[in-house]
Length: 303
Image 1: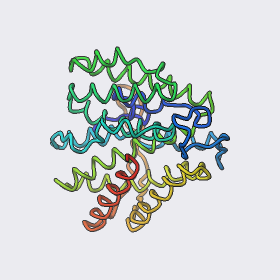
Image 2: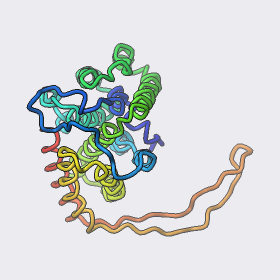
Image 3: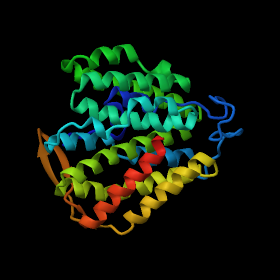
Image 4: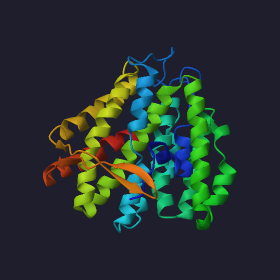
């Protein structure tokens, strides 16, 4: 499997580029007066921004999951994605941020399979959602659209998407909008796991099952940062749903075997080889429970 950084995760796809960028303060921008997902004052997390940033950086990219699916011979299935027509449902800053993450994961999946036509509509959605929370200026839509129409340009697409993502992420953090980054990451994680779960349901294999088992760690990390903002109604809703998923994951055990690392020479340089190993113990029944619960939570969050 290709080794993508966490940032590369939502980045590799033009859509992902937008995902972390979508920063806008909910208290400053309310699409509809009757919206109850926003609050009048800025959320003050219970943990420091530095800790939140460290946890965010530790969460792997859903793009890695999509790459694994393709490498294992899984075919493309558009029915696994959040329909682009759901865009009209995301009329608050928080819903917008969360579903930028969702669409980013979808676009990553689309791009891995080089489905140009589908990529166009998801790119447009990301751009529109980004504009709603005033970060569209960091999303080079025209360039990404041009690159997405030519499969020969995928390396450039990845590079520019990554650059866009970094600019948007930097903007969010300098503007003290970490809560929107948290939502986008949560949405992208949930959608990436959902896609993998549905593939596992249709065509299970050992590698995919184990990967889904290891998501227990990422879920725990995501809940740490979500809980930091749970005083807000919208975050409280997500925490409540993710906690139900955590109850199922609690049945899964992950063991770690430490082996002293080795050193070897590679191209004239001394490198350290990690020989330690983590093992996940997950049954077929537990996998079925995870698949069902992820589908339930995801249905709530995208509607």
